[in-house]
Image (cartoon, rainbow, N blue to C red):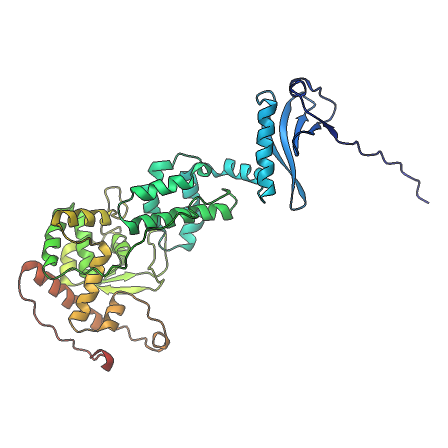
Amino acid sequence: MLAHVKRRPKRAPRRKRLTELDRTKARPQAKEYLIWDTQQRGHALRVQPSGHRSFVVGYSRHGRTRWLTIGNAADIPLAESRTMAAEAMLKVAKGGDPAADRAAERGAGTFADLADKYVEQYAKKNNRSWPQAAALVRRFAIPRWGKLPASAVTRGDIKQMMARIEGGVIANQTLAAVSAIFSWGVREEIVAANPCKLVERNAVKSRERVLSDSEVPKFWKAFDQLDPVRGAALKAILLLGQRPGEIANMRREHIVDGWWKLPGAPTPIWPGTKNGESHSVWLPKAVRQLIGNDSSPGFVFSSPRGGPISKLDDAMRSICKTLDVERATPHDMRRTHGTTITKLKFGRAAMNRVQNHKEGGIADVYDVHDYAAENMQVMEAVAARIMALVEGRVAEVVRPSFARPASEA
């Protein structure tokens, strides 16, 4: 028969209305102890065996006791500590977790730190367009509050940033990029909240801007007034019709026998295509003359620091102001190229093929013909048409030499 073990009864918690004398004179004991404040629920004075005294808040969250340290009692007046405890308990009543919020704030570092963590730990692995988003963050967000604690960025800061970005679309894209960083931070419990929530996007109209025949030579001449690399990149967008981000990241090692072969999947040196599909683009004579025949690895359109060229949208905005014409973007160069394909009677299917639009459907499964000869003819014809406009001469009429569906005839 087991002997009866006499258990020592639990010591009742110490409760009293804390005073300034307790804050400064509460005596230490062999073990740490708490004095609960009867004036403010959850508020207590913690006394260590060393004599160190601190104010804390204790509360329950999901059935577990949580502790929030207010601070050293020697530095914080009792009345102020009670106020801070009341604020913490109000957050608890609303479903919050002040201790977790405090831990998140300390672990987040600056906004620039959070942005770097997001790119390295998430965006590079899951978002093919991360370079474009990261560029917007570096340009519009980092200079404003990159050195601030990530948790200190407020909704007001986000609104001010939005208001100072010229161009509603760019502002919306920047908001989305910053919001993605904070949303990831919340999921990873690095920050407590996303200040981008409830910030309204700018209302923008769907754009269908295409350069007219008379505008093409004006823009081409304006491209010549830019720095050579940026000007050449914009010309390449107009002549090739590919996405501006892909043109900016174009690499010489991807050019084989006159074809630019775009890997679908991202790599450390290439962002991947938008739809994840590998794609081949024939480089017409005008483009080969534009980029030269250098075969050494690297970016075709390299920035002074060795990375891909950037700020193409800024260049287009400046050109439009100088020419006093309707706003046009780098993507409008791509749209102009696509429109020229259909204008030359090659058909919409050819435009989708050349510009790597994924159509989907059963045709994508059974139609494995690569259309190399047809695509080559399309690219050369469009480039010839554009260069004829640039040079002020009549373009040779090109008749498609391959059959098209009856619906496009």
